[in-house]
Structures are given as C-alpha cells and as structure tokens.
Image (cartoon, rainbow, N blue to C red; front, side):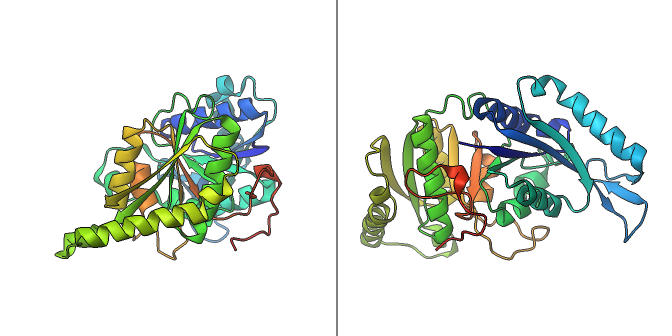
Length: 321
C-alpha cells in the first residue's frame, strides 16, 4: 500500500505518538522510511546561526552541530528502527513546512506522517486548543500525498483498523479523500463509514433552519453520496452512509466516537490563509485537535488512482479533475 513514507519529526517527546505510527507502517508494508527533521531557521541570509525549532534558542550552524543532531535522532529512534529494512535519517535547515514538502516531493513519498505540534509547551496550552501548529497546517495544505496527523497515542493504527470514517463535503479535494479512504478500507478489510454533516452553524448567528429545509438538504446529501462515492465502490459492501446536521467538526467527532473509529479521513482544502494568523477555521483542523484517533488529510489525487489501481502508482503531475 505504501512504498515510501516521510516521517517529519523534531525527535522530541511531542512526536512520540506519530513516531510509533510511522515506524509501524514502514514495518508492515516494508516501505522506505525517511526520518526527517528541520532543525533550525536561519536568522538571516547566509548567517552561521539558526533558531532551533524545538527550543527557540540560537545555535551555531556548522558540521559539528549537524552531526550532533543526526546522532541524537539515531539514538532517539534506535529501538524503533529495528525491523525497518529501509530507513534513512536526514536533517536540514530552513522553514519546516517548506523543507518537509520539498523532501516529500524529492523522495516521491506516498504518505507524510507527523504530529499536530512540534513544541512541548504548545500541548495543553490555550494556543494548542485554538490554533493548529503552523507547520502541520502548511504541510497539510500543500502536500500532494495524504498526510497522517497523529496527536494522541494510537494502539492499532494500520495494523488492526476496524472502523474508518470518511468525512465528505462534496468538493474536488473530498473526491481524493474518498478514494484514499475507500482503497484503504478495501486493502485492510475495514468497515468504511461515509459521513456528511449538514452545516447548521449559521444558527449561531441568529438564523434558524426549518425542519423541512433540513430534510431536503439531507435528501440531497444522500443523493450526492450515492452519485459521487457509492457508485465507485463496485463490489465493496462493507460500508454505511450517515448524514447528520449540526456544526460539522462537532458532528464528525461525535459520529467517530459513536462508531469507535480508528481513523478519520478528510479533505484539507488549500485556501490561501496565513497559518500564523488564522484561527482553526477549517473542519479538518478542528477535528485534528480533538480526535481520539489519527486523522488523514488529503488534498489531491496525485498519489491516488481510482478503481483497483494501487495507490502508489499515480503520476506526480496528476491533478484533481
């Protein structure tokens, strides 16, 4: 299912949950695993100093520092690397999201695995509850392959998944997310729940929706589910379709909890929003911060093909129709 995986890490405790998933996936699929860390941001131009992304402290960028970072990463993941046949540890300097996306493109990876945050002091803080990590936001928005975001411990992950929830919103990006969800469920033998929430968030601004209008929207949503998604699943019958109404991220989290979901798969749209300024406006980012299970963000069809063609053979230049 996966030939090449990029694990974006700071080699700190905040990435431990994502590390377990990344190394387990590499073992299960005998995939090449690229353990990658962007250890600092240049203070200016060709400056010999970088600001460490984990500590915020200024460090001298030289061969000794780079060698020390690599050795620290090898030591941190030594135990997990046992049983991984094709593992590579690498690091670089630069803006984390930009370098992660560049590395993913260069290595032609099928999946990026990362945590929602990179610094320990974000966890549990007000910023953690209100704003997604800017690196995660930028990578999810810019990636051409699915991004698996792990913000909490995952005991089953891709080994024993039973229930996968696909959050549908009928967009082009959602078509790519559906194909990944369908092929994942079919490959693993999981139950696939296709879920859509009728957005009633306007009620928070003094407007109300009549029951007749809600019922019409539910009927239309089910019709679109049938037309856009169910028609592509051929002989696969291990699925259910649900349409609820409410605030989308709240409803999908409630639904995933009710179905004991092991994985949520959604589209992460590529709106041009400054991640440093934008509050958690998108549904997928809200779900990431609150979900008890990992969340996969999918934007494009570049690494995904329709039908029974393996996920990993799609062209790098393919785009969402």
